[in-house]
Image (cartoon, rainbow, N blue to C red; front, side, top):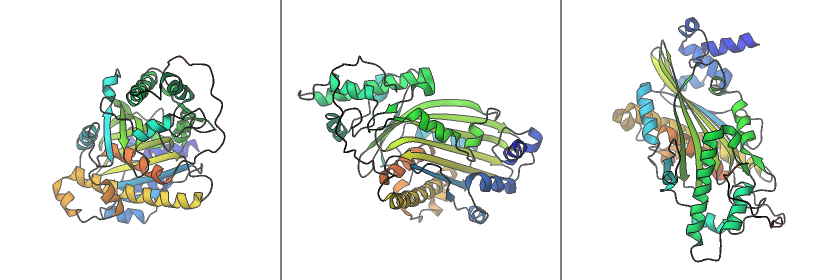
Length: 396
């Protein structure tokens, strides 16, 4: 079995873990074969791909709360152009759905959050928050700080609560920078606590075309950039504030440079328990591809009408990803191709037109959450503890 896995990684275009001689034999046919085996693509999909159309697929899930999609599109662009587009997107909204966006410094400060606004509805919801019953995703320690440190009856409570929220986000990011996954939050907004570390571990260990390479200790990937990005995304119900850890890897091969980007969500104030996106720029003789995987664990895909909700979520996620890939190809290839795709009128293109690669993760993940609505808990609120917690970073 181990020999078989090594063989598949060897013939995979972006399996940097294989031997150099085997890598030099990589072909488009081998690339297609691995996509079939690792990402649920079918043989007929590659005819569509060769017609310069994106191919998108649902991928298998083992958790009924999870939605997973994968897509691929061929492009005429270089790895450098892809990287430039990605870097440019780090601090640029690029789409009406992105209300606000920014990034944290290597040594995070409050100034990194100066452009972030906290939604008024979230501030109102925080007034009645207790651990186990809250309309904003927070840890128990964060909830108690809002209860104990904010005078909700004062005239300026909005400003004070906003400052505290930003300070706790800053403390959390600093702690994550220092301790990594050990610092990931435990959400206590519902009766049952959710460990983001455990949820992310589930997503990281799930087999996938790109995921297998990222988690392979012998893949030969070299980290070239590492950023933590925040964004506020507009959707019909509530704006979603997310914080994502973005890591960019590169490997040089005979066929040219290969680039891989991993985006892990380390916080979301609504809808999500966890989300992970992987993007690969794949160079091979005579061709280049963008490959994308997204797996998200969301509230609300269980219980009544779960099948109906899942069908809606999956349909919209596929449509959105198709539009994103098509637009990204047009953006990378330049005005001529963009003009040729101007008539592309799908739901996904109308919603996502103009999005750069970094925003694939932010918008597609939020799209999944849009229809996976969190259920309100009706259990009695737990009694408020008389113990006042000391200010601390937001740890689980």
